[in-house]
Amino acid sequence: MKLHPAQVITRTGLVLMFLLVSSSALKAQDEHIETHTLTTKDRWPIHITYYKHAGNRDTPVVILLHDQRGDRRVWTAGFANQLWTKGYAVIAADLRKHGESKLENDSGNPSDVGDLKPDDYKKMVAYDMDAIKDFIFSEHQEQNLNMRKTGIIAPEFSSIIALNYAMIDWQQKPYDDAPTPQMRTPRGQDIRAMVLISPMNSVRGLTTVAPLRLMRNSGLPIAFLVCVGAEDTLDKGEAQQLYKLIAGRNPAENDHVFYESYPYNLRGMALFGKGLKIEPHIEIFLEKNLLELDDEWVDRRSRLQR
View 1 (tube, rainbow, N blue to C red):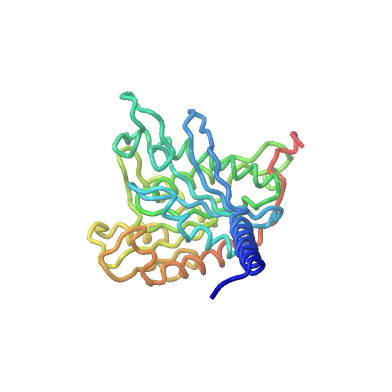
View 2: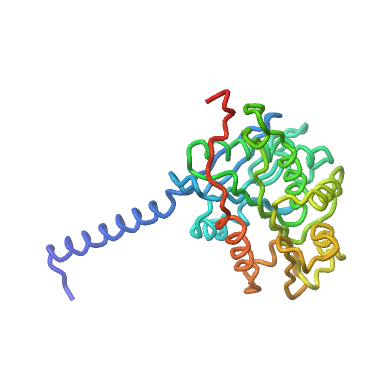
């Protein structure tokens, strides 16, 4: 069939209009996604992808960490945005020497997991997580989220980082800006929910002994979900041991610590995308322990600085 010039122009215009509309729709879909490079106190660049709920100060925030050989792309491929659609601000981070968070080493090559030293794990807790917390604080003060409702999802080795950081967070003393402790502005006590996936008990130079002792004996208001592959040959009972240490002598009576096992010899992020229901289990857990958490937004600056 032969087209007249007017028909060609019309069809060309329709194609251009479709492409423009599609481009605008894609841009609108991604407007809530930002990338940032944070700088730690020891001058290390930490790269994050941030899923933002602008102007909603009651929004809970979830920090997504990765496993030993991974990076934040394991989350940005889909689950991070899925959490955002459920009403969470989300931060997917590359810890030092992972993903884009690298510096040149002594030989001039980019640092990577092969260069990890025992001190690096401690720095992930003291510096990397602290830089992420500073970013959360700034977004809290901009009233884009509520840092009083912070959760962490951590697979494998990063569960050790998460637990040690939670311990530090809950040991932070409030500002001395009011007559009584109850009236003082908090500087921590923000981690309220933790998902530990195929958790480990130790890496070189860092263990979970101290944080687990604190969380077991002090009755901190933190909810835990421990997830593990039922036939995981590398687990060797570590996940169940950690669960029992947190839950105490009568786990069945503990209403804030949960344990879920999934079929097959799968570990960490390999549990996702297999239809094993780990994703809805995490969503239900976070909804109950973060989204429904009744903890109103407050200015987190010291009263002496306001």
